Length: 585
Figure 1 (spheres, rainbow, N blue to C red):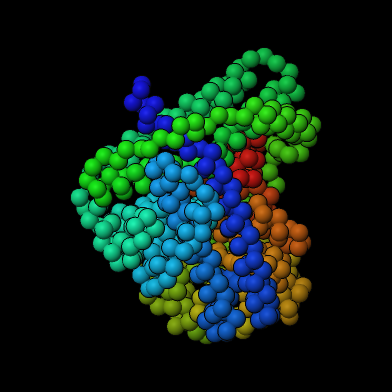
Figure 2: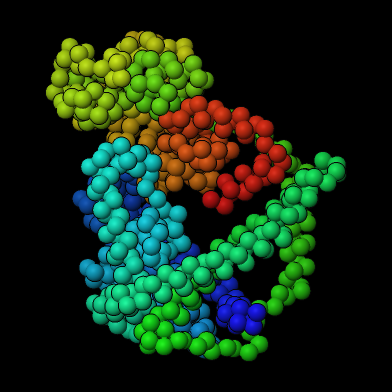
C-alpha cells in the first residue's frame, strides 16, 4: 500500500499546477488562435471568398493571400505544439524534479524551443504530431486534432480496394514504427536543448534499448489510471444511476436526480480529460530520465503540495449544479427530445440494400422509408447522363473504361449486380413522387455544361422541388445557385475553414468530423440545412439522429431505421447522455 501511495504521490502533488497550466495555456492558445483566425479571415475576404473548403482550396497556392494563409496555418500548428506539448514536457520535468512550476515560464521556454523545429525535419515532426499520431494512436498529439480520423468515404475505398489496403497497411506500419522510435524526440529538444537531429538519434537509441520495459511501464500505468477512473465513475455515476433506476420514486424526482448525477459524471469526464495527458507526459518524462541515465529516477517530493479540495469551491460547484438541475428539469422534454426529425438519405441509390446507382436500388430505398436518395451522374461520350460513382466502371461492372469514353449504347451492355446502368431520365421517373433525389455532379465531366443539362432535364420532368443538386466542386454549386436560383443545391465538404455557412447553397453536406453542434447551428442561422455524410457506424448514426442536423446520408438504411426506433424508446438517462455527447463532442 505504501509503495502504491508513493507511486501516486507525484501525480496528486502535481494536480494544482496541472489544472492551472491547462487553464492558462488554453487561454493563451485561445487568444492566439483568435488573432490568427481574424487575420486569416481578413486575407480570405480580400480574395472575395468567405471560406476555404475541400472543393475550393487551389487558390491557396495561386495567390499571395493564399500563401500567407498557409504560413499562418503553419505558425498556428507550431504554436499549438509549443504550448500543448513542449510546455507539458518542461512542466513535467519541473514537477518531477520538485522545482517550482511557473506556467508563464514554461510556456515562454516552450515557444523558444519550438524554433528548433523550424526546418524540413521539424515540419515533418509537427505534421506527424498534428495528423498522423491521432490516426495511428502512437506518439504525442495535441488537443486540437486528438479526435482526428480518416473520413469514412476514404476508409471505405481503402478497405474495398486490395492495393490501397496493402499500401495503407504498409504506411500504417511505417508510421507506427516512426512514432515509437521518435517518442522522446521532443524531450531531447526541450529538456536537453538538443538539435532535432541529435534528439532524433537519442530517441531511437533509447527506444531500441528499452522498448520492452517501455511497453510494460505503459501497460501498468494505463491499467492503474483506468482502475482509478473506473472506481470513481462507479461511485459517483454508475451506482447512483442504477439505484435511481430501481428505487420507486416520482418521475420529477427521478429526472432531477438523473440530471444531477449526470452533471457529476460530466465534471468527472472534463477533469479526466484535463489531467490525463499531463499525467501521461509526467510518466513519459520520468521514463526519459530513467532510460537516458540507465538508472532509476527518483521523484523529488514537494511537501505540502498534495491537492486538497477547497470547501468553498465545493459549495459553489454544488450550488451551481443544483441550480442548473432545477432549470434543466423544468424544460426536460424540450432539451432532451424523445423523437428525432433527422431524415435518412440513402447513399448511391439504395446503400447496401440494393445495387449501387440503379433503379432497383432507388426503389429499395424508398420502400425502406428513406426520405432521399443520393446518386452520381456523369456524361457519356455522346452527351447522355448516366449513373456511376467511380472514374470508370471497373469496380461495379468489370469494365476499365470511363463514362466519357463510352457511348450510351455501349454502357447499356454493362450491368451492376445484374441491374442495368440507368440514365438520369430513368432515375427521375423512378423517383418522382417517391423520394427526394440528391444528385451529385460527378467525375471528369462535372462542369457547367453538365449543370445546364441536368437543370434542363429536371425542369422537363417538372421536378424542381424533388431534386437537390450537390457536388464536391463548389464552383458548380455556386454556378447553379446563381443562374438557377429556383433549383435546390448542396455543397459537399469534408474540410473547411472560415464562414462556411455563408457559402452560396441551400444545403451544406458536412463530413462526420466537421458536423459539430457549433457548425450545424452556424449553418442553420444562415437559413440553410445540414446533411451529414456518410454515417454508417451505428454509434455515428445514433449521434447524428440525436443532433440538430436535418438529414444523414448513409449506406445502412435498415440499421438507420432501427437506430431511430431505439431513439424513440430511450430512457430518461439515455436521453440526457445523448444530449451531453452532442454538446461536448
